Figure 1 (tube, helix red, strand yellow):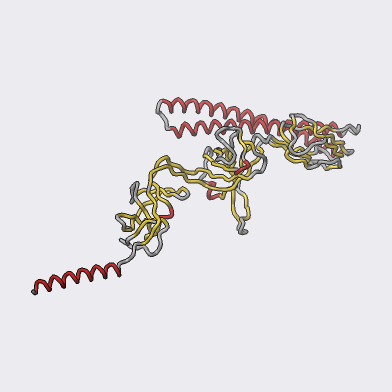
Figure 2: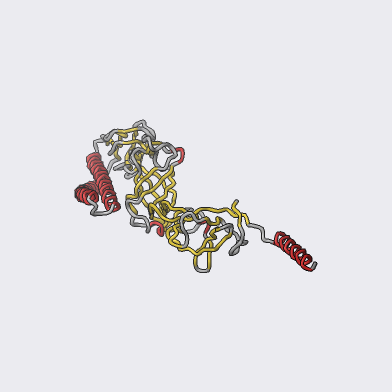
Amino acid sequence: MKTKQSLVLLGAAVVLGTVLWWVFRSPALPVQVGVVSDGPLRRTVDEMGTTRVRAHTDVNAPVAGRWVPMAMQEGDMLAIGARLGVLYPAPADAVAREQMQARLGSADAMMREAETSVRGARTGLDDARRTRVRMEALGAAGGVSPQEVERARDAFSNAALQLQSAEERLRAARYDRQQAAAAVAGTSGDGAGLPISTPQAGAVLAVAEPHERVVSAGARLLEVGDPRDLDVIVPLLTADALRVREGAAARMTFGGEAMSTSAEEQPGDTIIGRVVRVEPAAFTRLSALGVEEQRVNVVVAIPATVHLGDRYRADVRITVWEAPRVLRVHASALVRDGDRWGVWRVSEGRARLVRIRLGERGGELVEVLGGLTAADTVVLFPNEQLREGASVKMK
């Protein structure tokens, strides 16, 4: 009898304990989770840039006089040497003639300097070509890494661009010398007009003086450039620019305005360019909040297949570090654990705080150097209700 009563009491206690556990147990917290994965990671510097016609020239009045322009408007295509108008010089006194002679001498010196720059750029291109050929041969034999071969190819491309820029400066210097010589000849007092022509082929980008009127010496008449030859100017903060290297990849989007003749690059696609120069001097610019910032222009070359225009907006992401395969976790999973970082790892329905070591950060993903393995499940956007060993359920 006593044994039967004991079993009844024991059963009642088990039932009561089960009911109490069910009533007072902590409910499982609903959490959003992600999976730790292996894959590529890229760290970038993001900024808005502006397209620029790289080869462009301002056509200025060599002397004061009456400007009679040809009928033209923005967008008109011009051949090299096309006549833009006629300038009828104002009478010049002895002082003005001496100034024009001095300008002619300065133009001669600038032309000689430009010729020297072209010779130096050609020598640099030859050196870069020999280095590229040598590195490609070593790379094929396994003597150097693929990254070194790629750097040699980028150096050759940059040297070719430097030669092209030097040749363009030489053409501009020859034009300035020609205009200075014509100005000296035009002040002879015979009243003959001074023809003004374009120093390069391209499109009319801007017409500063569209109507006949008297202009001063040096007045800007119009701007001519080749809209098929573009680069992108990206004003980076100096702290970010320190991490950018020439030859770095730059991914650019132009929205629906991007036009391309390449089958792989449709409007709105990401265009891949290369950093060709980080300018040596910074400048001060006010931010949207009125704070002074030190910025420096980074020049990015874009493919010739991309047809845009001058001063178009570009959203640019310049790569400063990348790896083809690393262990990655979503940045929203990170929590501070004292002076270190940690994540809440989910195992068998329970949350466990795990300390981890971090490497590079790339947008929404972060490199994990230790503490996790691939396929681990972690809590994203953890809240303060999480505790060690807390029961969780995935949303």
